[in-house]
Length: 98
Image (cartoon, one colour):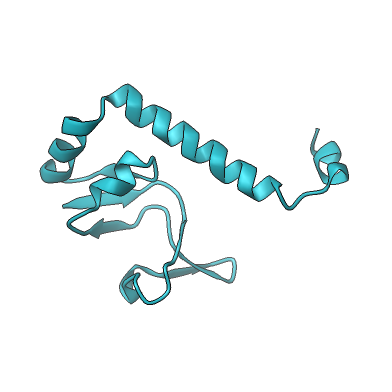
């Protein structure tokens, strides 16, 4: 089953295969655009972090979620990641962005 990451993802030390790891801005990640094969690749699609690449993954995902639900998962994942990044900012940092 194959999927393609649509965003950079953190590496799970000792679990993520070395061939999936790329250094981006000095940090080890699984980079957006990575096409990976794994029996549970569809989970990343369901969570809004990837898109299905092969027919097996597409079929598994379509049995569980509608296209609208997948889009909602992508949006929710975007919002969660944005909130996690902004947690470290001060109010002054946020004021400067506005």
